[in-house]
Image (cartoon, rainbow, N blue to C red; front, side, top):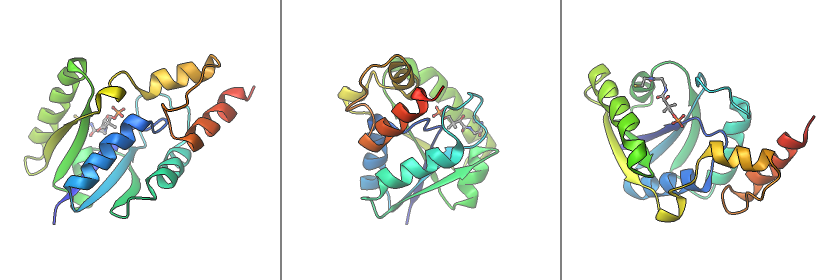
Length: 160
Ligand code: PNS
């Protein structure tokens, strides 16, 4: 029984994240999506909002649960009895930072393995940051985020 953790800021969840979560769900017995509480980036959505949106859109996958964490990711992996951390790679430009993080996490706890999954090519240019910028500037985010997230984004950016 292998449990995998899919960590991230998810501010907000995109269709690219869902692609990775779905791939992880088809590979592992259970998947815990772990939303980072203490992200160094100032989030647009509160932790509760990010968790709630993920819960709504991951509902079709019975083996996927949503949670949040603060502190070290590897410590949270142990707490959740997860032996694998899954990270998505979009392009070569992601690799350097991801390698650094994976090797540091291994140094902190060698029993937790990081696995990289390649996103579908159609998501390779997608990120939460770029989606937020498009929404702020009034562009369409259809297809980039799930519909309920698009709705929440529009509400968020339209507030004065
Ligand atoms: O979606 P993101 O912002 O790329 O996710 C980054 C995240 C949250 C996975 C990473 O910052 C993280 O693991 N933070 C927890 C703190 C930690 O364990 N830091 C050491 C990792 S080397």
